[in-house]
Image (cartoon, rainbow, N blue to C red):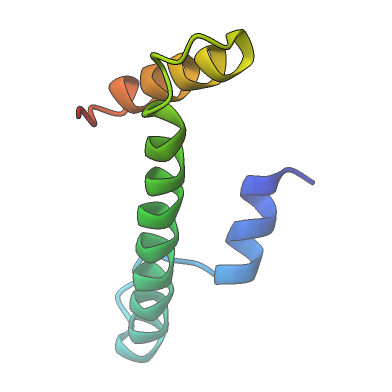
Length: 76
């Protein structure tokens, strides 16, 4: 099982189906998912801020994180 599958199972479905009670539950799941994404992006951004360090391993991680954010359309 992949991390993505685990998270989806923990949070639950987020796509609305057109039934009010179920969609209310899914909306709460969606809010939880959005909070998680914001925290994860913040964590990646913290690593990206290290992209100019001279230590190879830190620089490599920072560059990777910066590229990830760029691909998502998230710029500094």
